[in-house]
Length: 204
Image (cartoon, rainbow, N blue to C red; front, side, top):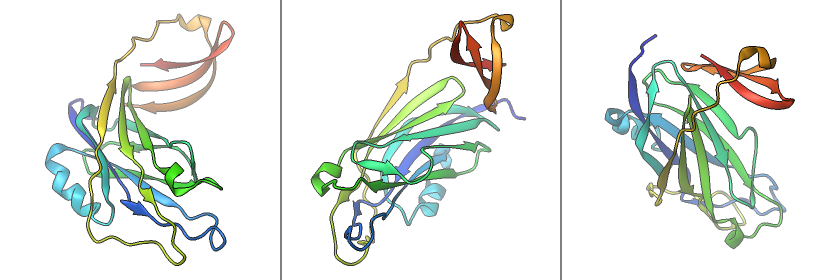
């Protein structure tokens, strides 16, 4: 396994305008959001692969990710939107363009004006945490089919790197291990009991 790390960048793609069917015709039309991971020199390849989607946010500073590390991405939709499927997905970084996607739908009774808002993707690599802020598409109702766009539109976005917090060191004999919850380049995480609350601990 390579030990070097590179600054991995992240971009959010999705439709600039989303036109669901009328609720009487289709109660669950999904809006698909893509989060792409790539290196700086791969940006053109990424854009070609994502040509059918629309970029709506970018984490331009990047996170340093080692070869073979697990990148976990957790989507946090705003009020008025609900997930269709999981809100947490992972990928193994092998220094090639990769992506995950999430399907969202409007809650019943949510109007087009209420549906607009900022979405967040929380990106975790080991002890590093960053948050990608981006806008969900404007909603407009139509009586027929989804509205199609020929050109991509990049939405304004911002990036927030969360300061790392040094976790406390707990003697192993003070813990009751319950189950593993994930593993990657930085070690294996376990759910454990400690005085007597549930904790998430990591063994390096």
